[in-house]
Amino acid sequence: MRDTSGTKMPSKRAASPFSRLSLVIAVSASAILSVVGPTHAAPAKDPLPADIPDYQAALNAVKSTEVHNAVCRFLRTPVPTGNAGEPVQTIPETAEPCQGLPVFTIKDPVALNEITPGFVAGTAKPLPTEAIKLTQLVSSLSTTVNGRNATVMLAPTQGGGWHLAAVRDGDSDATYASKATLGTLVFTEPQIRGWYQLKLTTVEPLNDQARQGLSGQASVSLRAYQQLVKARYADKLPGSAYDTTGYSSGYSLQREVDDAPSSTLLLASGSGAALALAGGAVVLRRRRRASTH
Image (cartoon, rainbow, N blue to C red; front, side, top):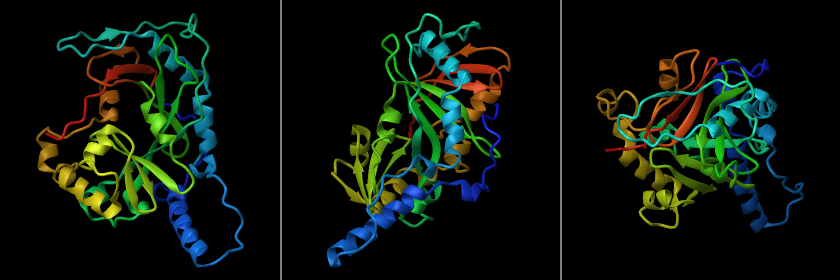
């Protein structure tokens, strides 16, 4: 995949952005102080996009002609039905992929946070900085195009910057990710497509899948939530017998991309349509629904 920025990035450990996570803790302390007595601290400001490493590179990516054209190709291609045995189709190359489509822009990217493997395994403490990590950036479109919307997904580029990882049908990822506010975090439990909001150390569901994941509870502590996900997935992490015998949930975008021809555009079936770049190729696949069996 092509690097969209020459900007150098800190080491992998330093590159994991926890500015918003630190803000959650800071707001907690500020709230306690406000109860004890007045403070003279400056008014809090909304978190800046710069909290995300190499954010300018991310902006450059979503505003680039290459990404815009990739979205146009996605929107011009019928979504696979997911029927068994549906043949792989080649998406024809076009010199002007956006010609004839309504004008649209791609919104500024926002953070997509997920629970960490250590948190799931129970080896990480139930703290925001250890429970949640930034994995991708997501952007939705400024308007629907012929009745469809899409989400642009960016992944960090090795050595710095961000690149297009996929274009997915619908805009729910970006919609939920955008609900983060000052002093709160939004994160996903990708195995069930559950979205949650973390307020200090309290987890609240944002969609039906998350409510089911909390067994109908309106909120739980981060510690209690850790026990729930540990029970669900601790024995299904990468490298486990569950994983190595082929029952692991989710999908590996990299494996799908590596398997794709380097010079053709393919359309394949599955569920959860996604368009991924593989070198010069664009691959449209339906993402398998996550299952924990």
